[in-house]
Length: 109
Image 1 (tube, rainbow, N blue to C red):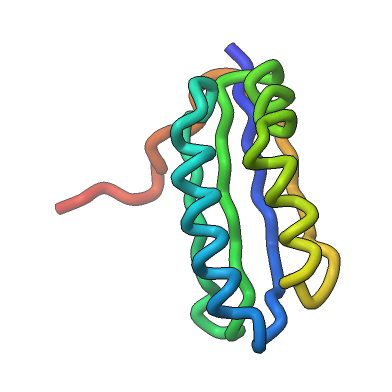
Image 2 (cartoon, rainbow, N blue to C red):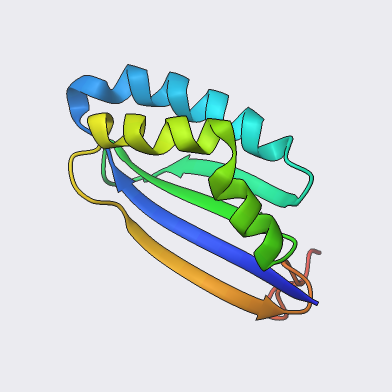
């Protein structure tokens, strides 16, 4: 099985922060409802205000391709261009196996 893992680093214009938070929340809900989505989350940097990471996983390449064709993605991408301070950075990986595995170095006590 091949899964798709995408991590984005996004810097938001400070004056667009509230717009971003509302927009990414709505987009998150829409993406999570897609049949091929495994997970979709966003996080703000603990050290850099208005810098966010988006972590998304799709069950396979077909699900990833279907994602970018959805109505909500087609609306979100142009809208995102209005709130970002610079072009987002992307890390796109095709992975064999499961999307998430246990970390060997840490065991709960």
